[in-house]
Structures are given as C-alpha cells and as structure tokens.
Image 1 (tube, rainbow, N blue to C red):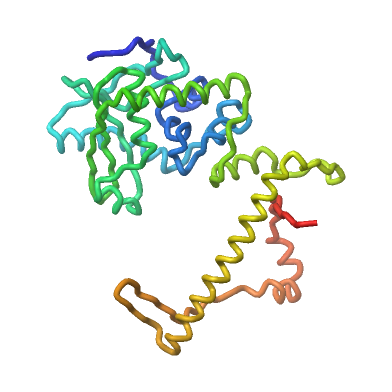
Image 2: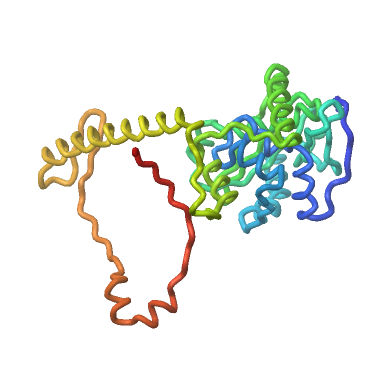
Length: 312
C-alpha cells in the first residue's frame, strides 16, 4: 500500500474520545463543509464547532444504527464486488499537513484503495439509482486519499431493506491540491480565531442563533452604519421577493379562474391540482377560556429572537 508521509494513531477507545479527537483537526466528514458542499453543515458552523463556540457532540439512534450496521454493509459490499476489505486498526494524520486527519472505515485488501460506508434513508433512493452521490461524500473520499496517498476510494451506500449502491472515486491530484489549500485556509481561521465568511445557509443561521440565543441588553443600540451596503442589499432583495410573489399570485389566480370547479388540469408540460382539503384545528382560545388551569398546565415557553428590518 503506497502511503503519503503519515502518522498512525491507535483508534479511539470510545465514541466520546472519537468525538473529542475531531476537534483537533479536519476529518473526512468535515471536508464537504469546508468546501461549502454540505447542505447540513456550513463552513461557518464547522468553524464554530472547531473553535469550541458550539458543542455538537451529538449521538442519536440514526448514528448508532450507522455504526452498528457498518460491519454488515462491509460484508454486503464484499459479496457485491468480489473484493475483500479490512479495518485499518489505526487513524491517520498527515505529516505535511498535521491538521488533516483520516479515520477510515475500511482498507481494500490487495488494492491501493479504501472503502467508505454509509447508511441512509429510502428518501434518497432516486438519487442513488441515478448514479449520483452527495458532493460531501465525494469530498470525503478525496480527503482520505489526500491523507493516505491511496489511488482510489470505494463508497458503499446501504438503504436498509431496499438496496446497496456501490461507487468508486478515482484520485485526482488537481482536486486534492485544491482541497488541501481550502482546508489549510480554513484551519488557519480556526487556529487564529478568524471568522470565516458568512453564507446564506440554514446551517449558518442556526449556528448564529445558537451563539446568540437572547439579547443581553435591550437598551444597547448598535450602530449599523458600517453594514449599510448589506442593509441596502437586503432591502432590495426583500422588495424583489415581494414583486415576484405578486407576479406568482397573479399567474396562480389566472390558472385557478380557468380551472373553475375542476380539481385537475393538464397541459403538455404541467399537471395542476386544485383540490379541497380538510384539516382540524385546535381552538386554543376557547380551551383557555373553558379550562384555564389545564391550559396553563400544558403551556410551554419557547424563546426565539425575531429578526425584523424596517426602513426609517
């Protein structure tokens, strides 16, 4: 097996130790976030975790199932491909770029390759049937090849009770060099406590809300003059959205009027439905009036900050 200059470390003894080790560098599952390819975690959110601003040592049933199913999926991959794989027994750390870490699922016997194992939901079936893989998985494989020096990485994606999807990612030194550069820039932000660029993802919004859950001083008014360009752009976007929403409603009303009492309409390109739906709602106002003590008993308080921009 050809290797880059790497340091081998014994695998963490516990899941908690594994989570703690992730804060010491950039792992394969972080690569997609660094590159902006992970819709579930932005570079900003990852930076908040790595710098200790947000603690995300979360474990849940889905993650537990993924770990427990790993051995089964590895066996299924061996059956499907006729290849053999084994656990490495070690995690790897790049000597040239010590912040780059790799805790690989499997190494492929007799090949200059590794194997990444994933379990996922049936909701993603259509994507995998078309031969597509999430970009963060691709970045993860490139990261592992960057650290280990291996030439190929296989991916086995298992949907319980549905199917096993097998892919392979070939090493690209050009892409690996770009990845190393991006990860080096990101880790410099972590080490020097430099805030990375803010993006428009839900992940970044969630991270900011976790960092600043409540306002501390209502009387402290911040001068936003330095952000006037951002505020002007925000207002312009809001005005454009309102304009587009009005246009959307106009076209919807045209189609509804043409449908009349019909519930379905079709054209060469579209199918439109306008059907009656029935929903039951709980009348909290009446319940509070009739059963005030019971209402208060089940009342829960949830705090959240409402963001509002008004032109003065």
